[in-house]
Amino acid sequence: MRVAVAGTFGPLHDGHRAMFEAALERGDEGVVVGLSSDEFARETRRPNPRPIPPYEERKRRVEATLDELDERNREVEIRRFGDEHGFADDDPSLDALVVSPETDEEVAAINRRRTDRGMEPLESVVVPYAYAEDGEPISSTRIVNGEIDEHGTLLG
Image 1: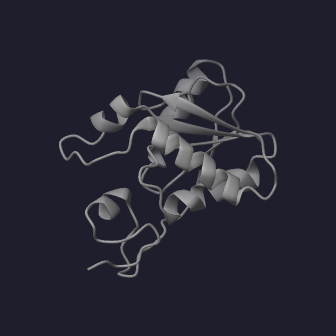
Image 2: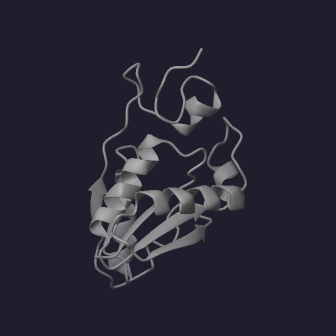
């Protein structure tokens, strides 16, 4: 199975790591990591912008994290994307998309576009949220705001 996972991934946290692990576990025919362009990352944070590390920095961190997590020596490709569906709606080589509960509904829209193009729909692999010590989901926004660290430990 060729599996994709996509996001901004900045800053990286345990929720992202869980998504990477799910992709690596299932991706015996390869894993494609979609990494949002700087422009798209900023655009999707309106009207509540937050600092986002530059693309190259995020890419280096994703590569290092995948190297750390990949016990199966999977073939991994990182692709830049710049719109809401990235490459998932037009890459016939993909079989599944790893998503969070917050983005699961996007798979239906992607699959409609895929079937309109004569492609097979993607399997949706929903990875549950990773939770912080306070029982709330870990998020990059909470990390940037200084509420928690990347593992969900409360700060301050």
